[in-house]
Image (cartoon, rainbow, N blue to C red):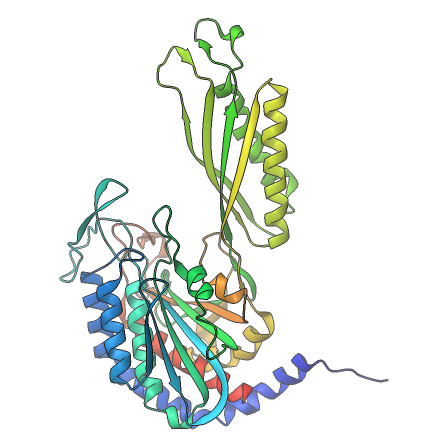
Length: 434
């Protein structure tokens, strides 16, 4: 019987042996990461106390650029407005791997009593509000700064190049502004030198410190915004038969949209969400307005399902409107693609994750319907995005404040694992591909 082996299968079989040869380097990386902990904590606390919104991260970028220059890296600033890119060339020729951290904070007023809690205030979309690192991006920056320092100390042993990407505006830009990973890619962050693979981590407040979680394939959902404008005919509220009531029609459309996921998407294969978040109509209680506008979000874990939902929203809204004698305009704005972990790359790097955290502390997680613009990098090159525990040991996840909330809190003892994970992923990838 003739047996055929794919290139991927052969590479996976060879991976443990190749990584075993990298043990001495990885031990040194782990030692250096532990030594970096005081610096990493100091960076994180400083950034937490001085948060900056997307595309405004000038102070943060300055700290990062100064640190990378002090390590002797090639540094580029002003990428995608405020982004910073550092290039570390190893002592031997080889492939190029990228490590990414996001820098921006959120328009949220912090309620924690930490000594380094944010007191920063701003005006966002015309409203006074605080600014807070309520999603852990301060830790991402600090961990990647630490990983850059670790890898700079072992660069003579690295067979290739490491590119450090510090990205602004992951949480999105102001209306009318470009930003985030999409703009970083547009401005060539994955070229010169050309990146072969990209890794990123996200701290998680409901995962115990010391834990790593990952998922091959679709890990986080795509995120799209839809807007539906229903056009009817206004009338006095006392004489509805003289109207084509867009409010009632809009209500029927909202209910109809709920059947897309519950009755048209094969949920045993892929989760999806259609949520209406806003609806605006009229100015007076006894007047039927001529128009209604609603908007919402679409989440999907499979690009084919994403497109299926787009078509179903068009069909549902327009069909229901027509049945009522009204019309509906539907617009869909793609925002973030599916965060899709390349399966062969994930399998190749799984031994690294287990070696770094311990096999018992690495687990495959279920997909989530949150979104991440790391997906724009993954559209261009193979990528792996994973989660690092940030909840204190023994805590009930149900009692941990969620991301994007005023009480968001992290156990900083998990940051060293993040530094070690980023640095070791880069080193092991370069060895595997060398």
